[in-house]
Image (cartoon, rainbow, N blue to C red; front, top):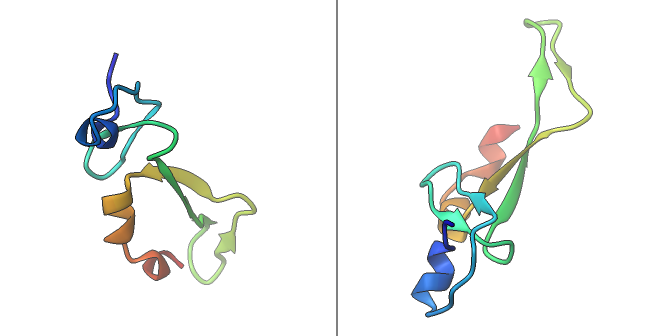
Length: 72
Protein backbone atom coordinates (compact mmCIF):
# COMPACT_ATOMS: atom_id res chain seq x y z
CA UNK A 1 0.00 0.00 0.00
CA UNK A 2 1.03 3.59 -0.55
CA UNK A 3 2.06 5.47 2.58
CA UNK A 4 1.40 9.11 3.47
CA UNK A 5 4.42 11.18 2.47
CA UNK A 6 3.90 13.82 5.15
CA UNK A 7 3.51 11.18 7.88
CA UNK A 8 6.77 9.54 6.78
CA UNK A 9 8.53 12.88 7.30
CA UNK A 10 7.12 12.83 10.88
CA UNK A 11 8.36 9.23 11.42
CA UNK A 12 4.81 7.84 11.33
CA UNK A 13 3.57 4.87 9.30
CA UNK A 14 0.12 5.77 7.91
CA UNK A 15 -1.55 4.47 4.78
CA UNK A 16 -2.46 7.03 2.12
CA UNK A 17 -6.14 7.65 1.44
CA UNK A 18 -5.70 10.17 -1.38
CA UNK A 19 -3.17 11.60 -3.84
CA UNK A 20 -2.39 15.30 -4.30
CA UNK A 21 -3.55 16.32 -7.79
CA UNK A 22 -0.60 18.68 -8.24
CA UNK A 23 2.51 16.94 -6.90
CA UNK A 24 1.29 13.33 -6.68
CA UNK A 25 2.17 12.75 -3.02
CA UNK A 26 0.22 10.06 -1.18
CA UNK A 27 -1.74 11.60 1.70
CA UNK A 28 -3.59 10.30 4.73
CA UNK A 29 -6.92 11.76 5.79
CA UNK A 30 -5.26 14.15 8.26
CA UNK A 31 -2.83 15.59 5.71
CA UNK A 32 -5.19 15.86 2.70
CA UNK A 33 -6.92 19.19 2.06
CA UNK A 34 -10.02 19.73 -0.06
CA UNK A 35 -10.26 22.53 -2.60
CA UNK A 36 -13.68 23.01 -4.19
CA UNK A 37 -13.49 24.54 -7.65
CA UNK A 38 -16.50 26.23 -9.16
CA UNK A 39 -17.74 24.85 -12.47
CA UNK A 40 -19.37 26.80 -15.29
CA UNK A 41 -21.08 25.35 -18.34
CA UNK A 42 -22.00 26.87 -21.68
CA UNK A 43 -20.42 29.37 -24.01
CA UNK A 44 -20.30 33.11 -23.22
CA UNK A 45 -22.52 35.05 -22.81
CA UNK A 46 -24.75 32.12 -21.80
CA UNK A 47 -22.57 30.55 -19.12
CA UNK A 48 -24.19 29.09 -16.07
CA UNK A 49 -22.48 28.27 -12.77
CA UNK A 50 -23.23 24.74 -11.63
CA UNK A 51 -24.61 24.15 -8.11
CA UNK A 52 -21.89 21.78 -6.99
CA UNK A 53 -18.22 22.43 -7.49
CA UNK A 54 -15.51 19.88 -8.16
CA UNK A 55 -13.68 18.65 -5.09
CA UNK A 56 -9.92 18.34 -5.58
CA UNK A 57 -7.47 16.93 -3.04
CA UNK A 58 -4.20 18.75 -2.39
CA UNK A 59 -1.36 18.52 0.11
CA UNK A 60 -0.68 21.41 2.49
CA UNK A 61 2.28 22.65 0.43
CA UNK A 62 0.42 22.73 -2.89
CA UNK A 63 -2.70 24.28 -1.34
CA UNK A 64 -0.68 27.07 0.27
CA UNK A 65 0.96 27.80 -3.10
CA UNK A 66 -2.29 27.83 -5.09
CA UNK A 67 -4.08 31.08 -5.84
CA UNK A 68 -7.64 30.14 -4.84
CA UNK A 69 -9.12 33.49 -5.92
CA UNK A 70 -7.96 32.81 -9.48
CA UNK A 71 -10.54 30.02 -9.84
CA UNK A 72 -13.63 32.29 -9.62
